[in-house]
Length: 330
Image (cartoon, rainbow, N blue to C red; front, side, top):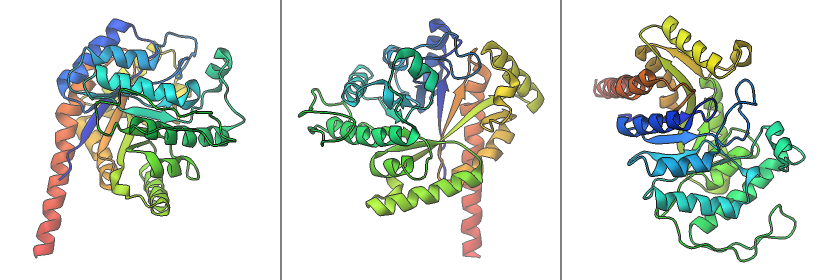
């Protein structure tokens, strides 16, 4: 039987701190498994020159205002910070939150924010993914209480790096976002406790197969990796009403329709429609679903995702399993 683990990401653009704090408290009260935000310095939807907050600072502030939900960046930009600093930030968050931190990280993709802030963007995506692999290897070692000295020729120059205190969690989980088949998924296979991806069901099925091959190559059990699906939900009694709410949110975020017309991660509809769309992903192993929510944060969607969609998905899985069992008996 599936026990869907729903999570929420609050967009950190076009919102005030009081709005973000109120939404985070609501997510926590409703019983969501995870609460996330972005790691960006410019807005990534619509006009880049609008208000946006820094991610690690938000997580630390939320940590003292919440009690149960896990906290992480979806996902941190590896290029922004030295990996040793990232490990220290995650460990600090783990202590501040009483053991609820997740270290989310990815290769980074938004060139204008790097250029404006004078951050090295590298020669291309391939190089940034090489940096990511080296970074995550060091982070995992340090979080687990080990020491790191860098090999010559790499991106980093660690010299007997070790850190105290260690995290509260015996194994602070690392989330890696992305689906690049040659490099990202190999790094996922080697180091990730959680993997975040998004896309059509057939594409995700192929990515799972590729990840399985990488796991076999590095001697890792793919079952050790939690699959997480990224979507952007708006839930109402009708799809038309949900679309109206989503369109108003995009206006608030200075995002024209043309910017998201080809983005198939925006899902609008009634709880039954959303549950039907989720079930094929759950069957692939994506039992954790994280909905990215734009400001102004939609309380109705927050309540109906966990209160109505989750029970529908769980019940559908139970019925499917019961049907399979009866057919085997028959």
